[in-house]
Length: 217
Image 1: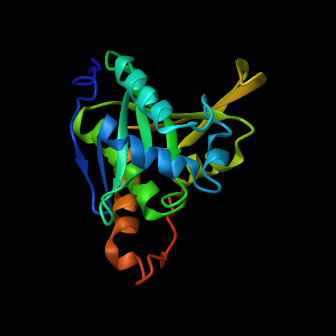
Image 2 (image 1 turned 90 degrees about the vertical axis):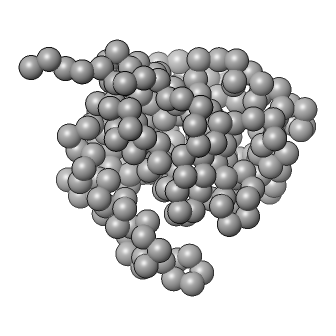
């Protein structure tokens, strides 16, 4: 059997969902992203990221410029209800020749963390990778000490593949990196569960879920 490469790298397009819109990160998002990064509790969410929380609006603007100059492709996550950017995430380790791509650089601000906004932001990336671009493998990596990130990966249907010990030095500390993946053969079942859970009928008037996301195995 001859395996096919993915169609292309992700393009600078807008991905529309029910609750969020993903659009290429730009300077117009800087003020919102700076605000959500610096509210009480916001800076702590940078604990496991490669950078610390931005120290000024100019710092946030510089980060966006740097991100857009690199090989990774970042998007801002727009809450469609408010029109505000509440987070960001990126396409990383983009290898269309192997059909493999990673979601990384994830900062989901407190207003969207652990909500349907975050779940849909992940779902839109996975759907675009598999359904639109034909990738075979969708990766998630994190510090092995980052228990919330590992729990999120499992909740979203990723399979834990192992740990790269002493993988890097980050913020002066040794990082062991946990690897997770989601494969194209698993995607139809997982896509259906995302669609079921994200249906508006699954949420009460205050946005509280009625049923949990159950990926199973």
